[in-house]
Image: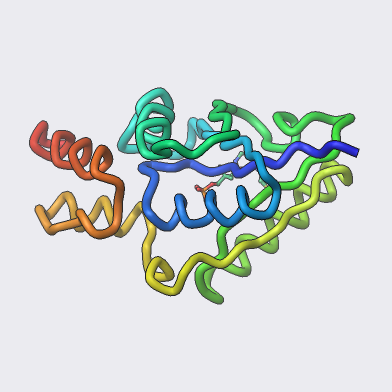
Length: 162
Ligand code: PNS
């Protein structure tokens, strides 16, 4: 049975930690759908279209990846009649409680949706989009942690005074 392999997230913006998870999922499954969410109650620095464009720019020559946008419930996006595997990155114990809640709720809402957690390389274990944005906002060097396009986009955003 063919299952959709979906890596959902906000990706505001994509980091090297996200790309590490993308590579691990590609190794395991051969293809991947990256689902970029829009949550009206969550303020993002980059618009959904910008987040998609930054992801597309950051994927380089990786093959067999589709980038899609979604809003509303992830399980609705995954589809009611289709088996799907959700990929989520797990960095530290602190991630676990929220991730467990989401996985359990998604499974309850749609039993055809399964969640798999992948751990990034230890070099990325401390990375989060929020911390990256904070460092960038204060003009710190984020170049080791994000793709070059994202580094430039963050610098531009904060020059604009975001
Ligand atoms: O990168 P993030 O911010 O950790 O991704 C969170 C995301 C987008 C995967 C999650 O907030 C989500 O699935 N949002 C869609 C709304 C939804 O389905 N909520 C119920 C989840 S149990």
